[in-house]
Image (tube, rainbow, N blue to C red):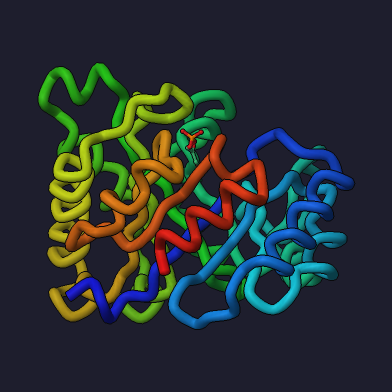
Length: 253
Ligand code: 13P
């Protein structure tokens, strides 16, 4: 079943790497990555360098933003408009990353508005969901995820849902060195797929790509990606060095 869904390796750089570091990274990746159409490779740098990286992205690497506002313009100092991301030829945007939910008051409602705005501006939303350790320990992971999925996808058509990539990132596994076991991650992603199926039917849910994120590295990526429902990885720390990022892509190939 997973074979019809193209794999994704995405690097979320968060607030890391200067322009020089970033340009060296994409140069090295483009030099060393075997050209292929089986794995979609994306990096999410800091916003001020998006344009420079888009202009140097090469053939196989795509560039995404880490956040944006849902409105096109207005008095929102410091915010980023979807229209400017489109202008800059950015292809993807992370929406609802747990760090945005935790530190910048991102809610399921704002996530929903942002997903709709991304689609309107032809940006591919990478819609992030995930539970806190406390919820996992209480056994309420699926309740938290259902709330995030159903509210995040509210009033989004099946046709548009097919444009979305979902990223499941358990918050307790981010930057901690703790990964969900591959079976745990796969089972949770299957539950997310069932939620999507309840909204849109099996045909849609079997096509939507769902990534795993949380302490993914070159050592655990093969095992994670060999699972039936995991379609790729959203990687933080291990995506910051080109050699490590290339290893992740090679593993996905
Ligand atoms: P780490 O891979 O550093 O755990 O970060 C995961 C993440 O938050 C990617 O969005």
